[in-house]
Length: 116
Length: 113
Image 1 (tube, rainbow over the protein chains, first blue to last red):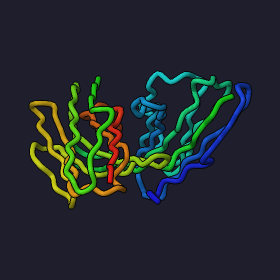
Image 2 (tube, rainbow over the protein chains, first blue to last red):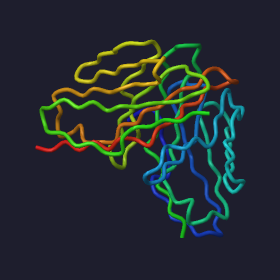
Image 3 (cartoon, rainbow over the protein chains, first blue to last red):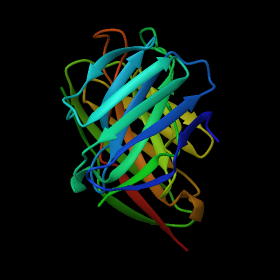
Image 4 (spheres, chains in turn blue, red):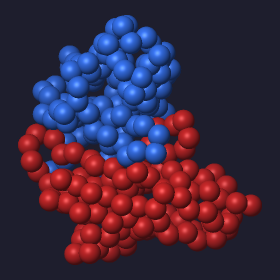
């Protein structure tokens, strides 16, 4: 248990469905992240929120829409996904560090998404 | 941008020592992390280096050379439970409100009896 909880753990959805992934952290962190992990590929950073404001969007398709209502909760809204979007979606949180400060990211268990 | 390289797979024997290397090229550097990820589980933090040298933590040690863009993770007295993927990640320097972690593809370590 890392203090970061993701639901659901597994999700199967059709290409015309709309679903949402949820992430919650109880660590008092001020930064939250969505990562995508596909087989044999590095973890890809999708979105970064700091103090509830989106600070980075790494060229993610608009069919992925993040929402951060407060510093403890993060959502990823999904619509009209493609089969190649099937992957493990990981949420993480950290304390935004000062220079050189060790503030590791804590990861949730992930949502295994399958698009059919 | 960032470019991080690490071997795809390694195999070692229980009780042995293994060194997993990581090289990186980055436009800014603010620390290097190693994470362990077992199949189907979340990555968990192992170590952090921001200055050159060796950081030791029990059976695990991590080394950094910033001038060479090089790090390694050293695992001693290997146990079967150490079979996992080991992820090298580099944090960029300040470029806004939050600093990003960029990950390598991971090294899948298999420990044999």
